[in-house]
Image 1: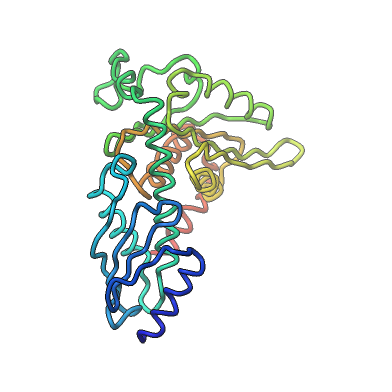
Image 2 (image 1 turned 90 degrees about the vertical axis):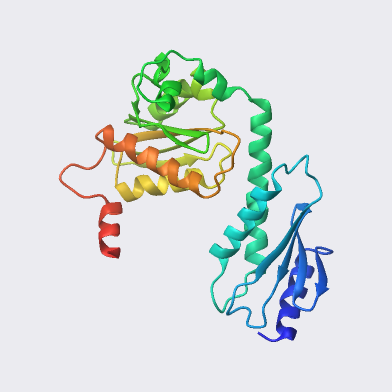
Length: 285
């Protein structure tokens, strides 16, 4: 890419996000993250860009009380840049969009943590009834969860994930069961309760839907998992307890892993047939 073409790309970003770009030196630009202008990234574009990835030179954090972990944010920017880069394709707009989405979620989770700072402390005080420390926190569930199939507990960097699955025959049942589960004291303390359901009635009427509960895109991913597993007449809820450390895209992996475990344990997979998910994986090998 010529210098003129890079300037054209930068000009397009300036048109979309006015006053967000500053030219520091030839091939070096500072970009303010949309909606989070106190976070800026200084990027060096090699002469061979976009065939070669740009390099993060510096992350500027002008609001350290709001964005408390600058080192962590630098790692996130580098990771997103690496995952976004495709040789031969420009990436500035996509990079800024993904960083904006991440920081939106970052502040949302910090707000949730501030409102409910003692979730993990309260969970830790529950009576011990399982062998592992993580299971101890969630093992002694209340009566609202006893008739749900529960997944194994997943923990990653102090965040905890557990899924619940239950058979349903119609939409009214699904709604009622969900309301009952979400009224459980411990389930209600989760930062997010992501849910999805697929129902096929005796009249062959189908219902399928999902709820992110504030975890952007998680509900749709959960519904897609149920579709790939080809399961029907089931409602699934995944509770995520935020531990103060941001997981990035890994949170979606844990949500789906917990959901898959609950669905499998509950016996909801089609009998004598492989799920679409398994078949799709086999085709890719």
